[in-house]
Length: 186
Image (cartoon, rainbow, N blue to C red; front, side, top):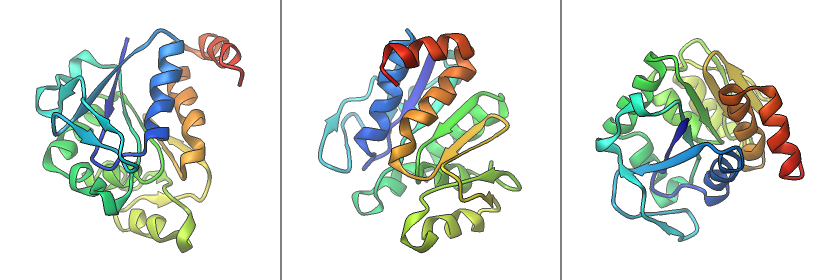
């Protein structure tokens, strides 16, 4: 079983690491991908992804995970790119799980897959990002984590572990998810 972790420029390391650790504890391989050979996070951590986005074959993966990031570090440049839109649509068209944290939901909105669906995104700053998500046709719900069909969205970095455990449960079932959660001290 494999999860594809898309790292857009300016991604938040805490949001990405939750997917890596929780899936790793459960024995699920996480493969990182990005548009460039080296990608820098919001707070300056450089990462060399396992694969470039253009080389991804979605048939090799069971789910897509996308951490959020900061606009001022170029997050939306990558997250809204044609390649990212195509990747998101392909995973959705195949009915595969897609899990996002915080503003990564805006990448889903930009791709068009949230039209008429319940979702959430970053809720602070007077709901600025939630209003942006609504403009993409999403039905915005001001809750920490929202699951609609094969899509999980959340509204801030604090929700990272919850999103990752929710994705894990979908992939391996409740019993294995709970075993992992307990083993990790949650």
